[in-house]
Length: 288
Image 1 (tube, rainbow, N blue to C red):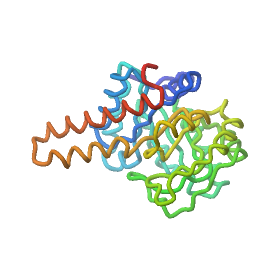
Image 2 (image 1 turned 30 degrees about the vertical axis):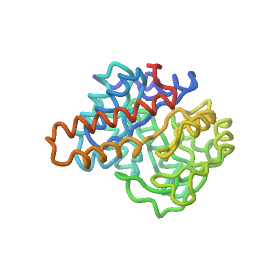
Image 3 (image 1 turned 60 degrees about the horizontal axis):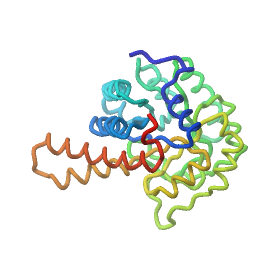
Image 4 (image 1 turned 90 degrees about the horizontal axis):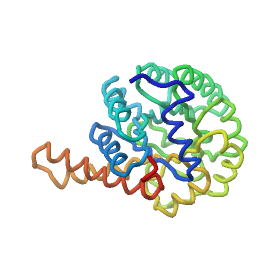
């Protein structure tokens, strides 16, 4: 199945409907075929749209193979599911990923580890490269603190909160999705706990929310109440990592020594159940 033109982009179709419907869609950070299958099964069971997210690690580890498997699973689902590359942190990697035939529907061109002017310049160039191939583009103005498994280590870089003015500058690069930094953190929140600046999110949404879809990173420890507040601030896509993958790790530990196929199936089921919970919290269940 070929990639549709940008005007019919799968990711943007999913997120535009979420914007219109006042709900958000889970973007599940997948590392293996089990998590990909769990995401698709959860979407079909909950009658929810969803997004499968891969990290650059997937390409470094398996070349095009995991990307093609994920694209096949997502695009053959009975409900809308798109494939997204999260945190592609070099221009070379963005272009490499964009050139995989019938692969990614959207790519995060994450140049946030560069200084702002270079970030803006590279983002504009990469957005154009993606758009020419029918791929939607995401970017991160400011810099969200912390690091994630499968992403180049940026945890030592200081987080920089996004301003509405910076959001405007990034929208002018042509991006389709904006991932603002408003106190959200990649990975662990630590002793400080969760301290989100909802007023900042709302100001960003008021400035650019009609032109781009707003994305939430660092949402693993959030509960339904926090999600609701973020959605009120314009969030339509929520990236989930450990909130799914920790269930797979738990099952592997609990079933050590059992037949491998049963461990894989049980782990997939545990992840699916976790994803369905997020779909109900985010309001996407029943919206497919």
